[in-house]
Amino acid sequence: MADQPVVELRGVRKAFDRNEVLRGVSLGLSKGTTLAVMGGSGAGKTVLLRLCAGLIYPDAGEIRLFGQNIERLREEAMLPLRRRTGFVFQGAALFDSLSVFENVAYPLREHTSWSEGEVTDRVHRFLSLVGLPGTDSLLPAELSGGMKKRVGIARALVLEPEVVFFDEPTAGLDPTNARVVGELIAELRSGVCDTAIVVTHDVEFAGMVADQMAILHDGRFAAMGTPAEIHGSAVPAVQAFLAGELRGN
Ligand SMILES: Nc1ncnc2c1ncn2[C@@H]1O[C@H](COP(=O)(O)OP(=O)(O)OP(=O)(O)O)[C@@H](O)[C@H]1O
Ligand SMILES: [Mg+2]
Image (cartoon, rainbow, N blue to C red; front, side):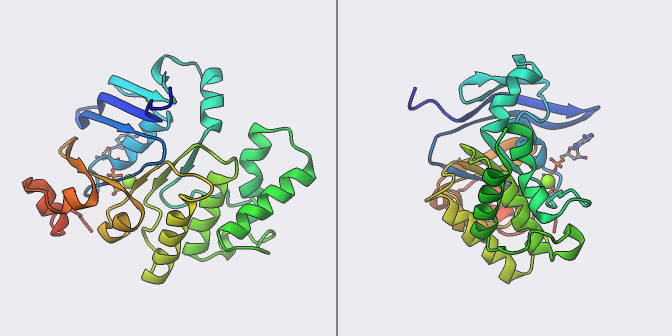
């Protein structure tokens, strides 16, 4: 179905021991939409993103990815769905012993049986896209924070996924690099991937890339809507978040 959400959560709950992180979260992400999920440190943003991507499973509620209920899927059935998604980890999470080239090539080697020439062409295309041509042989330790983030983005996009999950893509970057990454993500929407969930506590950045925003507070969405609706929200937790009181940084 054309109007079926790419990602859909209904009443999702997730606890770690007695820590009830998510207490009933629902969302529907349509194709062509970028949703920014905001909230304070420890609000459960990373947990939510990992649930959406099927990297962890909920205690209760339903998660559908491309229309399929993912809790009931075995790992073999998850694999083709994973191939259709990209994940940019908080803190880049590059393989330290692998070169930039091999980091970006990794998903291609895992999920395709392409020739070396095809892998090389694709990796070079995506390194250029993120503004890092010619960095093939560098090791992660030789990169700046902003460069690492961009390699992480190239790796997440290299299989041309239908949806990308970005976890704090601008955290820890100086304002210039944060803007470069923000512009890159905004640009991707008109080319490589038009559907994404971007987790961030950076309101300005969210305004740059998102057409929907949601604020996670106390295990639930305190509000969800367009940036204008969120900025005009009368919900106290939203106002407190926008005023910087709940960002925890
Ligand atoms: N694997 C885990 N085991 C136990 N507790 C966990 C685990 N993962 C997350 N948590 C807990 O879940 C809560 C939410 O964590 P999460 O990483 O989602 O926060 P966050 O909103 O991403 O914060 P930040 O902005 O600092 O990245 C925290 O209390 C954290 O300690
Ligand atoms: Mg996080």
